[in-house]
Length: 283
Ligand SMILES: Nc1nc(=O)c2c([nH]1)NC[C@@H]1CN(c3ccc(C(=O)N[C@@H](CCC(=O)O)C(=O)O)cc3)CN21
Ligand SMILES: CC(C)C(=O)C(=O)O
Ligand SMILES: [Mg+2]
Image 1 (cartoon, rainbow, N blue to C red):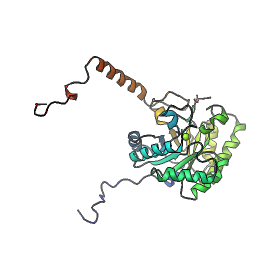
Image 2: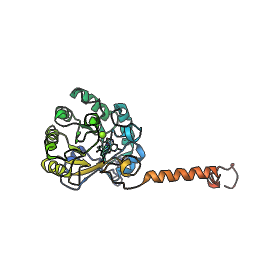
Image 3: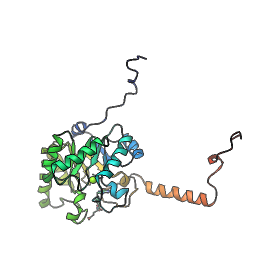
Image 4: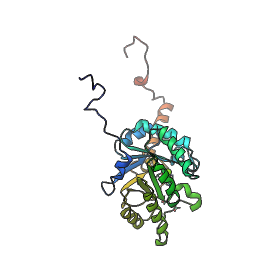
């Protein structure tokens, strides 16, 4: 083996990590596969199949039992972002900026985004908002922070909406959402998440935008899809219309725990094979 290249094995060279630019170039092609990730072991499994992993502020609801995403702070996002980056080698890792960490000013947004990237190893941030966030998105993306925008149903605004109902189900609701999508594109977002909107609106926005539209509850018309991993795994109690359960991991967990409890109480666990012997004995 050459001494010059001793640290570079051609065969085992890792595939380069997906970039925000790569995601932008996937507009109109094979749909972009995205899921949320909060912890290392799940991130490692997701990484094999996903183009993009989102460290979503949904972490507050899914892992901490909060009843909305409003109580999540930047330290929580950074802690989980770091965990996800340890597991993910290929996918683009994007961190949600939490409520209160970016809305005040573009400078506040940059400070939060800079921490989110420099303290985790993630390569992009996501923030909720359309026309009103365009100036912030422009400020970040011109300063080295790729931004994934998020329009349509914006969960951090749940108190203004009064619930998580779908948007754009009557045509008179369309124009503000279209304006938001166009504004974030014009401001330099590399892609946009479109959440909780009726199919014809999702189709129109996907057709009109030059950047990829990643849908959640926004029909098959989008350029890609995202779901909360625990939702599609059957590990979380809420079940919106847009969630398909691809597994019933929650039931599998309950079954395993029930078996453990039964075996401990009946002394059938632990068995010989789980038991240490004295040094020098046969087993
Ligand atoms: N686990 C999880 N999954 C998500 O998709 C998610 C989060 N958490 N947290 C942040 C937001 C909140 N989201 C939600 C939460 C609830 C509904 C829901 O229950 N939708 C109902 C309609 C509700 C109504 O009409 O008021 C549905 O039937 O789809 C939808 C999106 C999406 N996001
Ligand atoms: C549902 C996705 C898009 C999200 O923002 C989150 O998981 O926080
Ligand atoms: Mg979010």
